[in-house]
Image 1 (cartoon, rainbow, N blue to C red):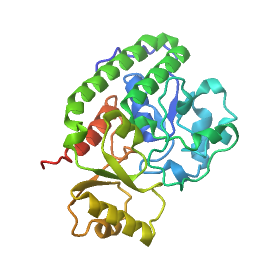
Image 2 (image 1 turned 90 degrees about the horizontal axis):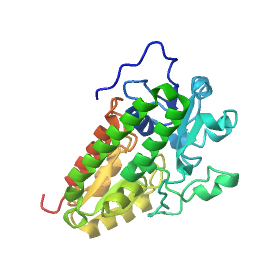
Image 3 (image 1 turned 90 degrees about the vertical axis):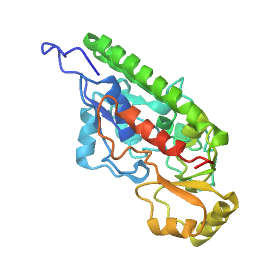
Length: 294
C-alpha cells in the first residue's frame, strides 16, 4: 500500500503493542508505512493459559498503546494494566459500538478467569476479531486513538483506515455469495471461537469439539461427538494446528467427514499492512470449500 514517507523530523510514532497476533494484524493495517506494532504472545501461543515473563512485562510497561481484548481472554493482563494510564490502553471488548455475542454453543464448562466488575464478561465470546463488522470498529478505534496521540500523522492513520475498510468490504462482497448457508455442509469447529464469523456469515456451525483449545477430551466426549458426526452425514470438521491428530482419526474413522484446518490466532501469517485481509481470506476460502456439491 502506498503511503506518504514519514518525516524524519517528526518525533517517533507511538509504540503499539497488541496482546495477540490477530489484533496485531489489525493494528498493522492502521500503522502501515508509519510503524510496526509488536505482539505480546508469541505466535502459536494461546492466551487462555499464558504466563507473563519479565520481557513481556517490559513490553507492556514500555508500550505507548497496549491493545487487548478482554479479562476473560487475557486473564494475565488486568492486574498489570492497573499500573498503566487508561489513556495508554485500549480494551476492545468495552468499545461502545462493538457487537458482543454470548457463547452460542456453550457446553457449560468455561473457566472463571474474571472478577469484580468483569464478571459479566464471562459469558461473552471474546473472539471478536473474527467478525468483520467488529474488525472495522476495532480498526477505527485504533485509528482514532493513534490520531489523537500522534496528531502530526493523523492523516496517515486515517488514510490507512479508509484503505483497510475498502479492502475488507471488497473481501466480504467476494465471499458472501460463496458462503450461502444452504450451499454449505454442516460445520464442526475445533473450539468455541468462531461465533462472530458464524453470526456475520450465517454459517451452519452445528457443534464444536472443545470449549477450550487446551482442554483434553474424555472418552465420553469423543464417543458423543462421533455419534453427532455420524448423524450429520456429510460434514466438515475444522481442526487447529495444536489439535491431536489421533483424536481426529478416532472421530472421523469411516465417516463422510472432510477435515480442514483453521487457525484463529493467525500463527503463520506474516505481519504486514494487508495481513489481516490475508488472514480472513484464508479462513473464508477454507470454509467456502465445504460445499454440498463437492
